[in-house]
Image 1 (cartoon, rainbow, N blue to C red):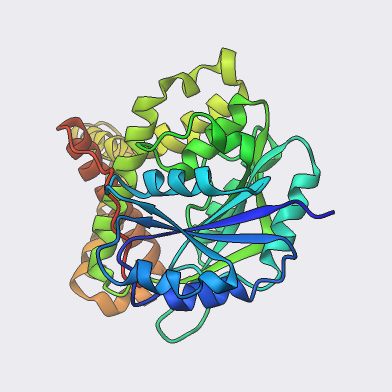
Image 2: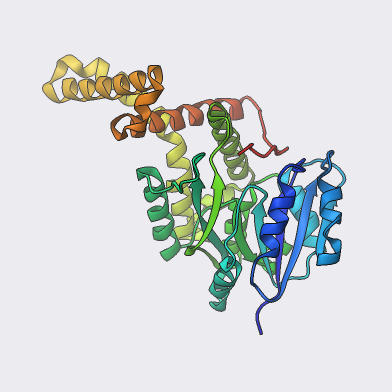
Length: 337
């Protein structure tokens, strides 16, 4: 007998897209699937549209007070009956057989959570996601998955055993990180599923991508500050090392960049190696500045990768400063795609 699965879709004011998402979910081929829409206190017509599908088994779990994505998900968790809980966003399109593929991973009793892999659909309809950064991310996920488990899931489409979600569901931490952490707490692992894909469009307004990154990083910093025990290797073993490397060290990169540049300037006259290091950095940042001034050049790899790298690390630096000033991101506003 297949495991009972509850598919939880989180939505806030999604009247323009929720019908398409529900229709997508109703096409999924899994034989025992419960569909619940978790409304984060939507104030538009989202809930009314969901109720139109009640005769097709679609259920509404509404959070009456807007406290963020994870709070809305918690209302759906309490209302669900599945042994496996799958979480998705409105913007993500799920292939027909994806739930079946995802559920098979739970045949292994050591698996506590499963992450899909992301595929971006560009404005022209082509599937992106094969760039250097995405290939690196997918490779890193694979390495983590084969060792102590993922330290973060794809927030737009992931699954977990009910017992991983029933306890310690922190509404103030991103569910994609908290679910991986809860799996580790129970001696289980979170794995990546390379054959389970989630498709979503890139952000409609590219200028908003920088702000989206800042929000994401602030939420990540908040999660780690709420659960510092995850960095204790005597409790979490290699999982702690992976969190340290994937999260903390990545967030430290912009500060290392500043330190390297300042050190190179101070030591430039002390030897050829220091002068070459400074020259290399000047050339690198020069490429980024040219890419910023002439956006059309960013389609070329020589400009695209350095520009993306610097943009990400500027967002990390800004988010870190905002976090230290006390800014938190609990209320969730989906990006328009």
